[in-house]
Image 1 (cartoon, rainbow, N blue to C red):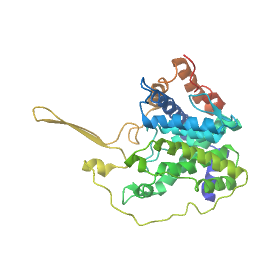
Image 2: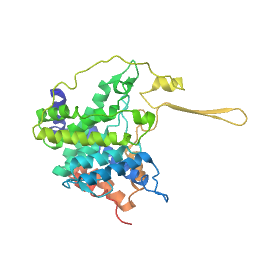
Image 3: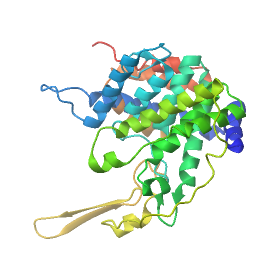
Image 4: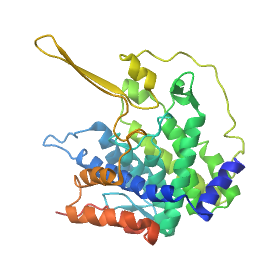
Length: 353
C-alpha cells in the first residue's frame, strides 16, 4: 500500500511522462461526451416513457441528489446543478457509464475513466485545483485502477477473479482509483492517500446480477465508485484511517471454467481484444463473412486524437449547440496549461434553446 501511495503522490509532485500528460485530456473529453450523450437518451417521448432505462438511471440519481441537498461545491454535467462534490461525482459517474460507451482497459475489462474522471473533476472544482494537478490526479487514478484490474486477472481462466465470483470489477477497482485521484487533489501526503485507498476498499461494491436478471442499477456502479472514492478521500483527510493490508492477494477456489462461445477464434483472442465475426447467409445459399480480430479503439487500433475528438463532438452535439461544444473542447485542451475544472464543467450546462 505504501508503494502504491508513493507512486500516486510522485505523479502529482513529479513529472508525468509526456505521452501520459497528453493522453489525459482525451480521457476527460471522452467522459464529457458520453455524459452529454446520455441526456439525449433520457428525453421522454410523448407517452412519458424514456428511450433507455439505463440512461434514465442518471435522471433518477440526479433527483435523489437534489433531495439530499448540500453545499454547491461542484457541477453536475449537463444540468447546471451545483451540489456537494461526492454527489456530483455520483451523478456524473452514472452519466458517464449510462450508454456503456466509455473506454475499456484490456484484458482486465475495466472502464477506468468513467469512475476516476468524475471523481477528480468534482474535487478539483471544489478545491479550485489547477488543471495540471487535475491531469496528474486523473493519470494516477486510472493507472491504479488498471493495475488493480490486472492483479485480479486470471490468465488461466481468461477472466477476472471478480467476474468469476459475480462481482463487477470496474466498480470495485474504480472506487480505489477514484480515491487516489481525489486524495491527490485534496493534497494528501502518501500516508493520507494510503488511508484513502484503505477506506475506499470498504466501500467498493457491485454485483453483475443486473446483467443477468435485469434492473437499471448497473450505470450507478460507476457513479457510486466515483462517489465512494471522493467520500473516502475526504474522510481520510479528516483523520479516518484504513487498514494497510487491503491489497494483499487472496486466491479463492474458482467455481467453474471459461464458458464456451460461438466463435472459437474470438474466444481464443478474448480478452486481449474484442474480436467478432459476422456471417450473412444469402438467399442463394452462399455465405459472406467479415472478421475483426481487434475492434476500433482497442490496443491494436487505438483512436487517434482527431478520432477521439470526433467521437466527443458526436456525443456532445446531441445535447449542446456547436458553439458550446467548441468551447468545451477548448477548455479541456487548456487543462494542462493553466485551465481548471471549473472552466470545463461550467461549459457542460444545457442552455435554454
